[in-house]
Length: 194
Image (cartoon, rainbow, N blue to C red; front, side, top):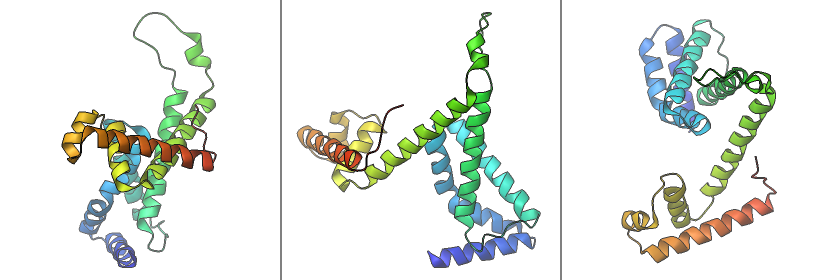
């Protein structure tokens, strides 16, 4: 990890000095992690790609202006930029009134409290982040079944075929995963309401 940070710092320095290829290496090294983070917040491939591109436009601008001073912590710095752009995306979209293509004008679409909508989006993304973190702490077999069921929308038959266990075993693992999730949620007083 320490070596990668050093390599990132060297690549950033080389890019600032005019080596365009250094930026390509940095982007390729971290694109999966950054894109996955953005997608986990917006849940839309096109929006995630737009935010990802905007993130690196901002990175390039900042580096070209010589304003980068993160002392080798390139990835956390880029993640912060991505996070801020995700928040900007929610703010911008919640401020924009949404009209259907019909001729009816809905006054409530104009006077809705955009700051409340933005706050709800942030709370929702925080809750989703908390749940993802809890899921990662589950035993591997339970985590696998839960992810296949919840995120891949597989039936228990498909999970059984995919993992090589019986349907009853898959059902049992799912049951224990949910019990364990509930225990952690209760223990940490995590509120999962809108």
